[in-house]
Image 1 (cartoon, one colour):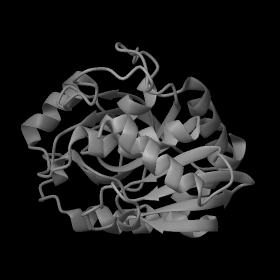
Image 2: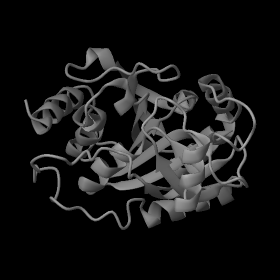
Image 3: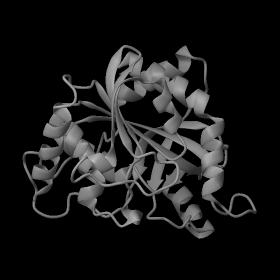
Image 4: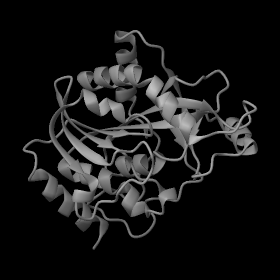
Amino acid sequence: MSLFERANTIKEFLCEKIDYVPDVAVVLGSGLGEFSNEIQVDTEIDYKDIEGFPVSTVKGHAGKLIFGSVGGKKMVAMSGRFHLYEGYSTDDVTLPVRVFQLMGIKNYIVTNASGAVNTSYQPGDLMIMNDHIGFFCPSVLTGSNDERFGTRFPSMSEAYSRELIRIAEQAAENININVKKGVYCYCKGPMFETPAEIRAARVLGADAVGMSTVPEVVAAVHGNMRVLGISCITNMAAGILDQPLTHTEVMETGKAVEKKFSSFMKEIISLI
């Protein structure tokens, strides 16, 4: 079964559960799932109950689709995403994006937990992504192109919508929080990066680093969706501090900033 056929079958299944097209789709990264408690829920569907849908295996990813409302807008949230390092294919990792595209969703907000490459950042900061470095990410568009999804050679000159970035900046101002704006660098994982890799990323212009997001964003841009990326800085990247990195630290920082993150997300969605 082709990726289009898989996505279309799941789209039809989901459209039997809801009778509207969400205004926005949100992907919740590691430790950021508490935002789902802010949703006025219409329907929750476990990934395992969606035939052909992958299942998240990473701690901090609940593994369910949540349809409902936030800030007066209809939305769907992915509480948990899929990573290439879990052993999934590029088709598996981008399948939800393709489903959202076929459902007619135009706005795609992707969030993640990331390590600070920029030494002026600190754990707990929120960063609006204005670009990414994806050199180390296998292309999710490798193989024959399905024109039903998008063009063969999509432009990535505005991968992150300037209009949605403007909205996010306005949202931060409205609720009086300071946010950063910077470049996210994709690395393969699941091992944390080496100090040398972080130094190289800094030379290339990265402000934060993580193990997700870029594959999904490429698929969303290919599908002509507007993308907004929000990174929660959960730790200083390797070599900045003289201490090892752990996933526990990622989860703990996500927990500590959940109120600020949730308020920010609610305000963004209300303005879209």
